[in-house]
Length: 364
Ligand SMILES: NC(=O)c1ccc[n+]([C@@H]2O[C@H](COP(=O)([O-])OP(=O)(O)OC[C@H]3O[C@@H](n4cnc5c(N)ncnc54)[C@H](OP(=O)(O)O)[C@@H]3O)[C@@H](O)[C@H]2O)c1
Image (cartoon, rainbow, N blue to C red; front, side):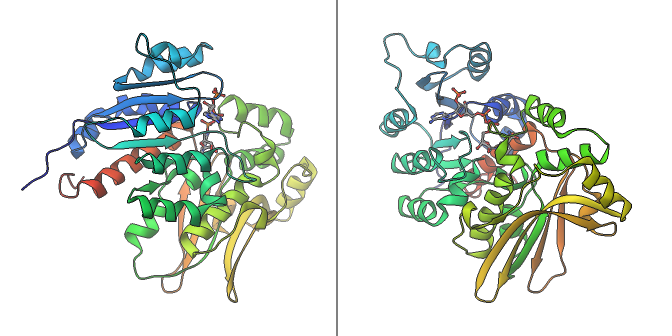
């Protein structure tokens, strides 16, 4: 007998910063596409933040009102039902959400601030969400880089999906690409430029501009991490290296295991000297199998003019995947933005629905 389509996909947003707020707009913008694909309506049932309150409304709340409230410095708790006591924090919200009887799956989208040391608070949120019976989608590389085997096992035990397409190249497929289109191959290495902010800073140096105003520009555009030293000192790229190593190469690395040099010490003189030598100065990430282990590094390098990475300018990113049978495959992102990251969350929602209700999703 065919299963009835549930009334809604019930989203709980843990973190309501640049990415999550952009997602609210993108979900509105893509509604017709999602409907055409066969997804049930997407409903925002809860939001948790650090300083802008928490709210849980099982019938769903108006996302655009939550965006306006937060962007004007207010609290999302104002959207709660009269008489309801708002959850005090994300964990309390998740515990409450887990006890609701909902028509349709509960999906937690984790987009709190990146912490490369231990992946917290995101790792705890992911575990709490799985324990509450939710599927989890995250754009936060912390848990994938710091606690991959633990959360993968927790998701398997809970029979829930854990998806994270946006953690390396925003909306450009990386994990989907390998999983869905490169079967029966072993990934032996990945190499790339994976941090937009530092690539933009190095381009500014080449143009004779100082790093500080270029960094301020990246912060104003919401692309630099809340703590910009995570970009500048190579931590963000190291976290991506660990995530790629863990997921694609079965490693057990954390960002601290990645050999790392940032870009803070570089000057316009270094960038010009590289150009004079027919090279480009780039922050390059490498992950490779060495003997029986997987090793990863992030450091500035002079990249020769003929190298595919030499053409990756400004806000572009690129990743070359090497396997044991095919020739190298490079994916290039022409300009990262918040919409690209929010799109990764939307694409994960579609993947989730394809897995939960195979046969109900149209092929497009
Ligand atoms: N921005 C990008 O282009 C991009 C690209 C790829 C991946 N990512 C990843 O996506 C995630 C979100 O990025 P973003 O730019 O949206 O960050 P953001 O603007 O700094 O927002 C972070 C959000 O997390 C909330 N938060 C922090 N700690 C929390 C806690 N303990 N409980 C509940 N909420 C908490 C903050 O609440 P308050 O607002 O109240 O402080 C804020 O709403 C990060 O992990 C980042 O690495 C970002």
